[in-house]
Amino acid sequence: MKRVTQHFDLLLLGATVLLVLYGIIMIYSATYLSGEGGQSLWDTFFARQIIYALAGLGLMFLATIIDYRYLENLYRPLYILTILSLLLIRVIGRTSFGAQRWLGFGRFQPSELAKLFIIIILAKYLSDRGPSIKRFPQLLISLIYVAIPMVLIYLQPDLGTALILGIIWVVMVLMAGARLRHLAILALLGVLGTPLIWLSLEDYMRERIIIFFNPQHDPLGRGYNINQARIAVGSGGWWGQGFGSGSQNQLHFLRVRPTDYIFSVLGEELGFVGVLILLLLLGIVLFRILRAADLAGDDFGKLIACGVATVIAFQAFVNIGMNIGLIPAAGTSLPFMSYGGSGLITLLLAEGLVQSILVRHRKLEFQ
Image (cartoon, rainbow, N blue to C red):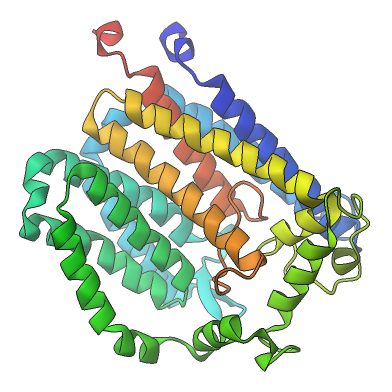
């Protein structure tokens, strides 16, 4: 146990816990204070988020204690489990808001855990291949590994999570040494296939993109959330309207407040200063995870840490960009802040793997 605690990153843990608490506080304002929730205090969004956070922290410490290198022998079962869980969604998955993404027991979302499993699987594949990833066939095989779960998630439909898997692949193969010209060839093929991709999109996905370029096209329909989010963030000013006093939030003009638009609640009630605190905490988390990647004693650990950092950074960028109107709405949660058990627990479990990498980065101490 002494070896485990010796290199444990307390700064990473502290920033993460503060982010989770920040999220719980804002979920409390977005739901309970605004009159949305259960009959009792403990039958509420923020109370359930507390339970998810405690479960996630427990799994984080468990993952820290276990040597992450054991996962190298489990990549095949993890991949099979990922595919089977996503196929199971097609059979018995629960549908909500027009998407079939959840399994009935506890509303578990397999696509969230798939992000972490794909990171582990890619890390194993890429670390085993080493310099041979510079060869196009090896790069293509790695893409196939990711493309299968991407398609299954896209069919749910969940374009946002499918894109996250694609970004994970791009960053990890780049870190592994893939040639830029090979990625450029694949990107060109993707561009040429854009018309087919556009036709395959669900109607609401195409409408989101159209609304992004012209929010007034349907201001009371598809453009409603975008416009209300902009109003909420813009009205916050430097210091915000005050905790629990945001008009867009408390009067329910802003929809899906505890999940996709929790950033707008934060911006409206705590203002620019509140947003800066959020960005500072996220920056600390990302910096410490990238530090773990730099300190990792092997390529497997390095690639896992890079993959975890990619998920957090990309999700934060997409969610914040969506809330302030920089990118189309994608239904992507804000890491550690948005309500949701599957997403929060998976991120905390992923950080546990990063901590496991850190506490074992000096090989001589474990001989």
